[in-house]
Length: 322
Image (tube, rainbow, N blue to C red):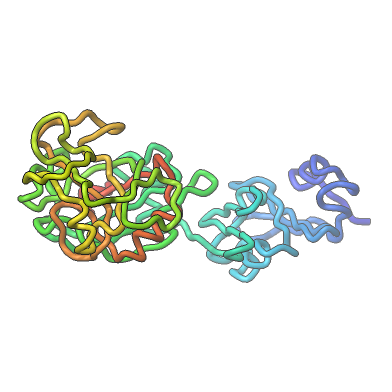
C-alpha cells in the first residue's frame, strides 16, 4: 500500500486525488533530502517535492522543464527546489530557488539563473526603480569618464528579472554625469544617469516592434533649440543648429534604427529647457553625444521584443547598485 500524507498529500488531494492532475502515487514519501526535503512520485509523470522553505510543489518529470531541471541535479543542483508549479501558456515557466526554467515551442527549454546584474533588480540592490517593467535594460559603465559600457537585457518572468542577453555598448564620449545632474547640451558629450521609460521608436525600416514606430524622412528633426520644440520630434525643410537632422544621422548609420529614451521628457518628467535632449538607443556602436549605441542588428533585436513602458537604467556601476 502506498500512502500520501502531510503537505504532499494535501497537494495531491487539491489536485483531484487519483482522477486528478497527478494520478496514483507510485512511491511512498521519501524524506531526508537536502535541506530536510521530501518527495513523492505519481503515475501522471509528476513528482511532488516539499521543503521547509518552499512548500509542496509539483514537477512534471516527463516534461521539457522537468527534464531540464533533472539534468541540473534536481534539488541538489544549481536551481534547488521548485518554488512554483509550471505556469503559463505559450511560454511556460517554473521558478526554482535559484532560477527559472522556461519553455516555448520556438526556443525550447532554457535555464535562467538568479545571478549577475539582473538579480540586483530582484534583491533590493538596484538604486534606480524598475517600475515593475516587463523588460529593464541596464547600461553600465565601470567608472566616470568612460564611454565603454555593458548592455544587459533583463526580462521579468514570474515576478523576477532574469538575464535575456548582453552585449558591449557605448555611451557619451565624456561618460556619465553624476546621479541627478543633467546631461546638458549634446556638444559636451555626456550621458545622464537614471531610470527612463521607452515608449516609441524610429528608423529607416521597421524590424517588427510593438513600440510605436516613426519612419524617418528628409524632413525629420529633433529639437535642440530652447523653446516649444525642445527635446521633441518635428519636421522641417530647413535646419538650424543645435536641432538634430535625424535624416542626416540615418544616412551616417546612427539613426537607421533608434528608440527614444524618455530622459527630460514625458511621461517620465516635464521637459526642463537646457537639461538635455535627443537621448536615444541607436545603431552605430561607437562613442556618442550622450546616447547609447549598439550594433544595428542588436538594436533590431531589442526593438523586436520591446514593449511600451519597458525601461532603460543607465549609469556608473558604483552608483547603480548598493
